[in-house]
Amino acid sequence: MDDFLLKKVDDLLATRVHLGVTGLRRAGKTVFITSLVHNLLRADAVAARSPLRNFELFDEGRLVAAVLRNDIHATVPQFPYTQAIDALTGQKPEWPTPTDGISRLRLDINYRRGSGVVGTVARWLGLTDATLQLDIVDYPGEWLVDLPMLEQSFEAWSAAMIRQAQAGSRGDLARDWLAFVSDRRPDQPHDEEWAGRAAALYADYLQRCADKGLRFLQPGRLLTPAELRGAPVLRFCPLPQLATAPASGSLQAAFAGKFRDYQDNVIRAFYRQHLAGIDRQIVLVDVLTALNDGAEVFDDMSVALAAILQNFDHGKAGPMRWLTGHKIDRVLFAATKADHVVRGDRLHLENLTRRMLNVLDESNRIKAAAGISVGVLAAVRCTTDVVRRDTGREVLQGEARADDATAAFDPGAVPLDYPPPWNAFRYRFWDFQPRPDPGWRYGGFPNIGLPDALNYLLGDYLA
Ligand SMILES: Nc1nc2c(ncn2[C@@H]2O[C@H](COP(=O)(O)OP(=O)(O)OP(=O)(O)O)[C@@H](O)[C@H]2O)c(=O)[nH]1
Ligand SMILES: [Mg+2]
Image (cartoon, rainbow, N blue to C red; front, side):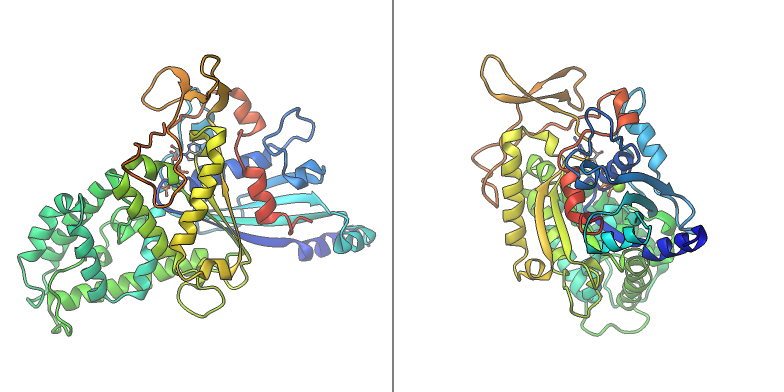
């Protein structure tokens, strides 16, 4: 075959995989994407130690080269890969900034075909190399929490949000907003200025919840509005004491109208445009930070996750099918920041995550839906395991946040039960900072579990 024809056939044979990277705010999505891309771009078969060791394609010497494409999505911002790398590998390494809008990337993974039937036939035709086109979207975790709103009416949503705002420490944070909206009856005539004030007070309340580590915060666009900052569609909030049938022109009718607008033009549009058609899914869960923050935050994260997972409605028609897509057959649940605990505790972390998932997936929809795997992950590993001479205990070596010295840390233990026993101990896991290591820029990021994740999520495509 001539070269032109070969190229054509090769293009036709290229496989495109849309990898969904899902997670609540600060779960570790951006760091995971950065590490995945960087480690594939920097893959070096002759390096003595590679962060990709155990990634089968790499170990078998079939990874030719990965190429980051910037010519694919003309109207969507490119994933800020360079900024993230500059932050993580600069003089004073830092974590990338929280994501405040959508971005996409395409990574072409060029590889040599394996020895399976398709591979053998293709090689016989002279097509030894192939390309996997990996598509990934990054978005603010706040937006994910909006998903369950698609199945609610404004009235039902309001009632649930008011109940939530009165419980636990939220009661204090919600005081000003609740006082303001309780002051005017929802059957009074709509007033856009009042609506703007109510929404601003509600956004303040959500922000204060976020600062405490709470994550079940709707609507997410009030926290991270991106291009919708100041847009009229965001001038709504839950209202108390609603009637079953609002009079037209009333506050309630207007707020319900904005709520529907938000469902259609914000939530649904976002998912349709960026998350539909996902082939494989990784769900990142920050179990450790939630444990650190105590029972209220932990429960809140669990409730938020459960609400999102309820929509893993595989195979059936419904607004939520995007989460698994029509053809998704593998989902990996990964507890992130596994470098915050010692080696012996990583298995506990995995077991706790598995148990949590079992409890949250009440209807067994997820388990029935797809191949499910549970693991632990540190996309950028900032600690090393060392054994203390005096006690023989395993501790972590690294640079904890708000702590100048690099020291040995002995973090609390990961509980074995879900829900965790809160009275027995106080869980204490440090936040570790990226290390200033020149090797990171040129050789890739040390990690825990990234090769396993790649094997599970992409291995069969690359066979
Ligand atoms: N030690 C360690 N910390 C991590 C790792 N991944 C994420 N983190 C920490 O978690 C924080 C949040 O990570 P991001 O990747 O920004 O989280 P995200 O899911 O993109 O968050 P949003 O953009 O807010 O939705 C980081 O700033 C780090 O402090 C990891 O592999 N190891
Ligand atoms: Mg992010």
